[in-house]
Length: 228
Image (cartoon, rainbow, N blue to C red; front, side, top):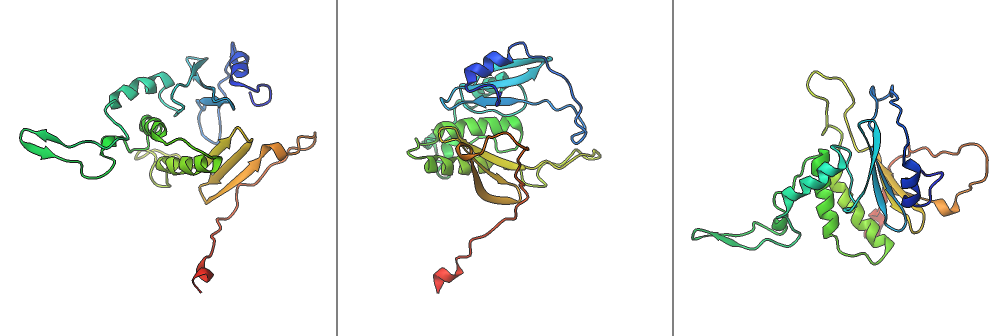
């Protein structure tokens, strides 16, 4: 898709009739069930999932995607949270007893906070829908970083079942793509400094494959001298 398609429309056409091959991944110890969210600079988006040995494609009307269960299940599950809103909840009376919000944000009371894909989908959909409009790329990036931090899986939060072997899942990296200006921002688990690659300035001439090591140490800005 990246090498042959410039738009979601072209990707949709290219993927028609594509066959899937189950390839065992030694590092993961399984056949990965990859899922894809394809987005272009116009905002058009497409969810691509392998279901029943075929690639199933569907437009993404909410702009959110998590990996399990299938996408249509997540859309149906949103109906469970119809009563949630970014607007503050109003006080009510139960019998003659006044029930008041315990603090700001009570309109979202009941929002799932765990790290399962269904809960992450609901949080992402409602949070994204509640964001104020952005005026600049920097403002959008700042808001999306704050939003994404609510989905971070810290080491130790997702361990295998008792008696089972396997890796401890973590959020290995985070990425933010500015499709309008062709920039890719990213951070890694061990280095939260936001780094950027400007695709418009890359050298695309033929030659050896060029890569970047992500194993870069975390740095901290020392502001001690500001108090002298």
